[in-house]
Image (cartoon, rainbow, N blue to C red; front, side):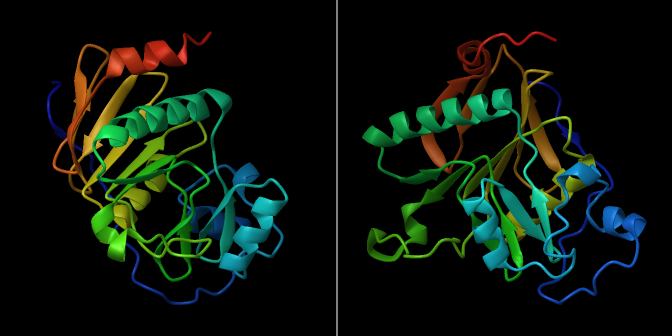
Length: 230
């Protein structure tokens, strides 16, 4: 296992919910959204006025978006990142087939860490303990946070954006957050907002207390995804 490190300058978990005034300038908007590329920001509805219903309607038009501070933010994910997420979801489901610990959702699974905020982890595991009598709620946006959230990063993700997401996940009750770096072919496993262990292709991931008994070779995972031309 590589040396444990701490990432610095973590964005604090936003205070729940206050309605922010619409941004007055593009600079203010980009700063509020952690410096993400402008191409990921939808301008309809006007930034600062979007709602959860707008997220749902955008999906019907083929736009996969998260809701952040009243702004629709398009997910930054290419085909290769999506492939890594799909393969991981398959490995999780295969494990859960004989270890019935909960459910797995893919990148289209909407969740609400707090009112007015909608996130879509690329892969998410929810333990059965989150669902009374193991009955899944009849709602389009889950009003709960996964026990394990996985984010597969693309070049359009920013450090501040990911710092904020971890704060939201752990603030909502997550126990583990995996950040996957496709170009570096490594995974950071966070146990708190700013503490992580790094695993490279020669090492093996485990599910810890969240998915006891689950193991996955990082090298095998990336090998299954295929070698990408740089």
